[in-house]
Length: 264
Image (cartoon, rainbow, N blue to C red):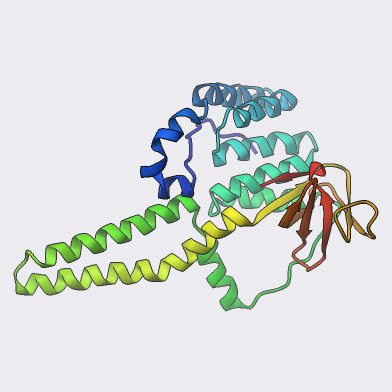
């Protein structure tokens, strides 16, 4: 679980899609990447010396400075895992996986950390075709997806434009390539659109305290349904004041105090 040593800033899919409109506003909300990189390197140095508490604090400083990078969250998860803080480690790995869903190291460490928590939530089994389709859908980051869509669109438009300039034999090849690229974009777009929709509307939450109670409604006066332990991960359905409506993969759910969780 040794940390990586480089930090490269990432841009959200929504920012890429609206870059032409948001550039003036982004300048005033830009993260302090200098401070984030310095904190990241300090965290790596502390981790290499087995000073995991210091490393975790430095990685958090990088997060607080506005860095949003899979390697940062991966290293943060490693430090918190070494400290036995499984809730924080799983939260960091989840954040890393959100940015780099195809990274095998992140996936392995996340699954390994989940073996150390109390609640082992069974996920309903999928058939082989569903697993293949889901892996294709979930195997790219939002940033990569936006660039794929942009590349397909640009290639399709360029090929079609060239088709009008080329001779008859080459024209057919150019038109075919352009239509193929645009068809690929049409097939890919629903997956990307669904990912962006989930990014904006559906979150995940990880229990950070030893125990979090789930109630049938947003308040402790409601029926206590069950208790979840540190590291348990929920899908967030909605937020009501200080409470989150959440659901587990096995279908169980309820309302939990937001302050007892961390958002992915």
